[in-house]
Figure (tube, rainbow, N blue to C red):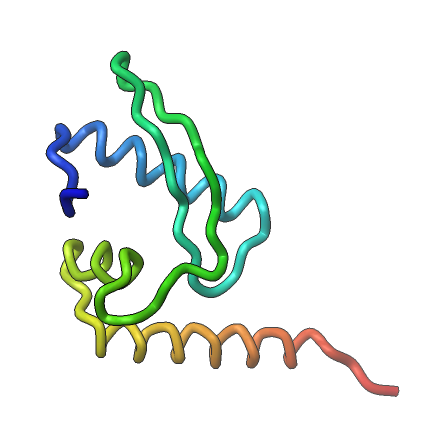
Length: 97
């Protein structure tokens, strides 16, 4: 597997937009990897959404982020920050009587 894939930037943008839409539509939170197929006609087909992707330094999930410019340590830091933000938002929604 080649990371990043050797595809045109506009196809990459299309895949990214569809992956984000699928993630948000399903109400995912935290880390996930959206796997897709690209047909010869450049149609994007979602294969699966992996909500527990591998997370070692040789796994595909961190490699994909590395290719986009976010290194392993920074990725871990960002995931922790997002979890803390989500926790604070959840707590803000709770009311007591």
